[in-house]
Amino acid sequence: MLDISNLKQAEEARRRSEENYRRIVQTAHEGILVVDNAARITYLNARMAAMLASAEEELLGSSIYQVVRPEAAAELSAALECADNPGGRTVELEFLLPDEASLWALLSITPIVDEPDTPAGNLLMVTDITDRIQMERALRSSLQEKELLLREIHHRVKNNLAIVSSLLDLQAMTVGDAQLSKRLREGQSRILSVASLHEILYQSVDLGTVAMDHYLQLLGEQIAETMGQPKGLTQYRVASAALPIEKAVHWGLIVNELLTNVYKHAFGPEDRDRQITLALHVAGDGYHLEVADNGRGMPAGFDPQQSTSLGTQIVLMLAEQLGGRVDWTSPAGSGTRAIVHLPAQEPAA
Image (cartoon, helix red, strand yellow):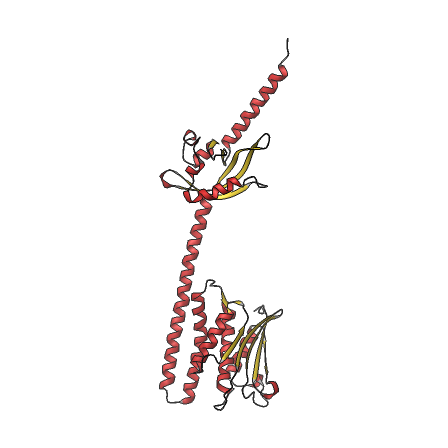
């Protein structure tokens, strides 16, 4: 007689192992799918059937592409073809459920290989991420609504400031006092420097920062128009830099005062070869904002710290708030150069 006890024990151990494996797979919290090389479903566990809201026998033998959104088929096909990459392949896609319901899932795809090294299909571990996708969409929708609201606020602020500027312009034209008219136009210019900032933010993709190259050139042209200066008089050499709104407002007001001062005091009626430069340089220690001209230069003994000019006081005050300093020079006694040195990080309050 042939003793087959060991063989029976081995078969029983294998049967128990397969039963345990089947029980684990069937009770797994994740959905499990097996597809062959033709993308036909050859196996799915109970969790996967429940996720797809269908009976197992309805899905067996059908193509997996029948249960995914048509627009996701190409992405799934590419993932199945490339699943033999080291570590498998993951993809997020939307399944097509009965009654047009939606199931978003994360698929972890691993190739199945028969001996000897023959591809036999793919194993798909499926995780339901519908709640996460819906939450992301809700957050994205809420963010878009807030961005639209913020853009509308910037637009309305710009329009309101433009109205105030127009009122000041009207008042300056009708007032009988030339000195008062001059002061009104200076106030108008300061208001427009802030209005132009809100106009840029209204049109910008990034509502949190201001592109200074665009803003400073727009501001310079606007100041020239307000001061009745010809277009193209000012040359711009402005490096690309993005600043938060609060800092950009300070910069805009500084440029407004410096350029306005040039237009008011740098040249006389007889000056023909007028040159004005607005430049922004980015350095390792921060930024260098420069306004220069080739006009008559600063008056002898000029001390900005002792100046009673409101514009000079505004420049010094704003630069100090940003943690910077201002240097005024008159090279070779011809022209004036104001350089505002601004650190990359403003000081703590």
